[in-house]
Image 1 (cartoon, rainbow, N blue to C red):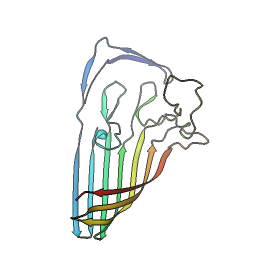
Image 2: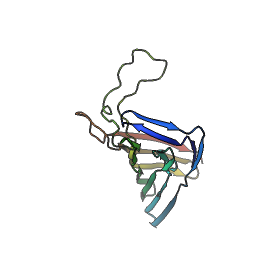
Image 3: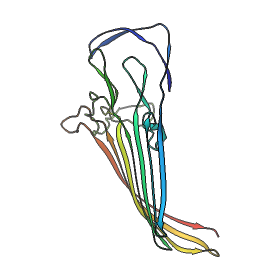
Length: 224
């Protein structure tokens, strides 16, 4: 990872109102990031398939489906890769030649990476002084806009952990080399996003979360 920044020559003030004097020239900064990935898939018998994948590393958020952050900044402006964990587990069963029943679970985590400045302020990824007081509030009416939809304010903490589980089945009504395959499937998915704890309120916990339940159905015909 590489960035260019202005080194801080002097700093002062307070946490609420810091002051800095910067160098006149850019300085390059490079940090090494990377991780380890492993996966396995086994079929103990014709009725069951099991699979698992996992990854752990520094600055590997972009390699997950949720695209979590790769890095944050230290007080001096240099990069700090964030430790990430990713995992996926799948269980697929085949009770009959026409029926598949399956379940999947995946999760991604980004570690809190915070620093205290010389003035006593907290910065970084998931800093504890970020306000989450408005996370459960509806957006206010802006009155007018140049485009887009209003968003809630006061929900500043980034993602700590995001997870999703899925249960479903596929049933093949017809599965013939001559006539093709006609099948339908139904699955239920549960997704949850947890934020890092910050400053809450009377109506909002310090570490809020959002969740969604989804049901999907589908029907397909495959030409022989």
